[in-house]
Length: 342
Image (cartoon, rainbow, N blue to C red; front, side, top):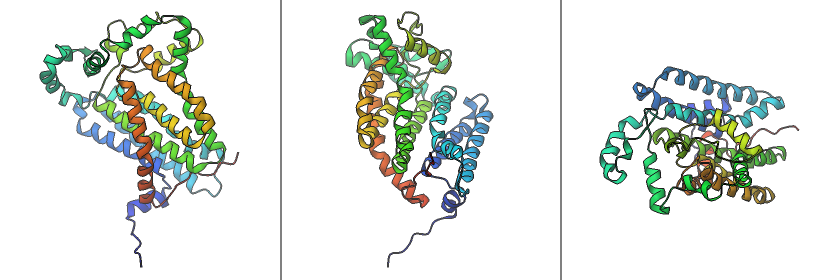
């Protein structure tokens, strides 16, 4: 007779009393990991207590939201929707926060890198952006090794036309539409298992990217190259203006490698290919434009794009295994999202 594996008190607390799902555990794990990094390396971080307090508030909010929905016999649609869709909102906060936490780890190894790679980079590793340490010379170097020039500086010069610039800015803007397009299609069709898997794969991919951005800070061409941040020379119309506003208030000098935009778009595209073929064919040209646009508008180096595709593909395929392991650990195999009444 097969023995049933006993669950420890923590597992029971998480799944039965707090009603947490795999996606919630992933968020709590990220908040805990980065919180531990802040505590250990707090000497390198100003206002470190504030970031710990924010983590406690976010973790408490996740637990409270799940308790509210999980313990109600018929939770209201608003709270079910919020529980299912809070993940993309937290992505925005995590992304912006990486710029504020990216000097936590790098002081430990920056001098070592400078000393050992000085001859290769011809002293460029000493470059600082606003007095902060970044590793962009690695990316600049590999772009030159692979292509022999800097595509983030030359791409616009080759095709400096307003209509093409507008197309590239539309491609970059389309990134913000990808999650809602596929996510709403699954959620409103009551395909709860597919939606749950989709969100979990996105979270695994993005939380890894954000952690890497904190450990390996890179600012991107727009900050690294003198004068590259000036966007006046870009022609365009509606989407160029929209991206000017978004980048002015939401852009950061961090997270160039790998491109999290491309990595996320890759996960979404592969999920669409698996779950919604019609949406896949709609998204394919958008994601293609996005890959080119990241370099054209100088948000990324060339090497960031294939790295993003590789990272997104890896976490798409390994995501099923990770989700299954966490679902089983929680005792919630499949852990579909609550059924929305719409």
